[in-house]
Length: 215
Ligand code: SF4
Ligand code: SF4
Image (cartoon, rainbow, N blue to C red; front, side):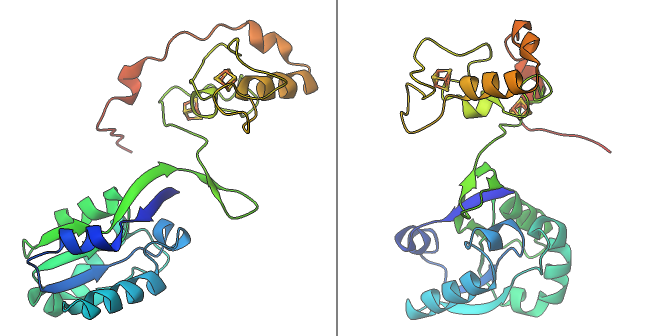
């Protein structure tokens, strides 16, 4: 899932300065999970904007589905309210914002209400943890499911570096060294020979921007 954090109220007011009629679009998927763009956050944002003299022409939070997939439907269902609007504030990731813009037939100003941070899994305590950097050349088969590109502070491909101390990372002593963790898992599985495989520098052409894949 894509992790987002809401922009500060000051930033949102700055972004919307000069716009009085605002339509708000949330996201029932990742942003709802991050509590940055679900129904509650959309309602709170509407109240906040109204308390600062803005007219909220309408709101929609596509139900449990990514706003990217639902943008067309959301536009069709809210056509009249959108016609009355000057701008759309999107409480979703950057993909959601751009998808809304590409589906906007009224040529409104479309603004982000959130910052996109990274893709992550959800830990048991509910926090979000980045574990993959979408490098385009996955090597998890050789590292027992621990990604050194992302979980090693330096992205070392053939680790550990000389700085690990008692299994902790030299960059952040509170963090386990990814390569020591990889070593332990490989040892447990009797696969230490994987460490003899040298990983060449990543072929960055596999991760050039913008990413694209046709099905
Ligand atoms: S190697 Fe790491 S960054 Fe690359 S695809 Fe696999 S998990 Fe993601
Ligand atoms: S100590 Fe381990 S996790 Fe930290 S930078 Fe070095 S190899 Fe990477």
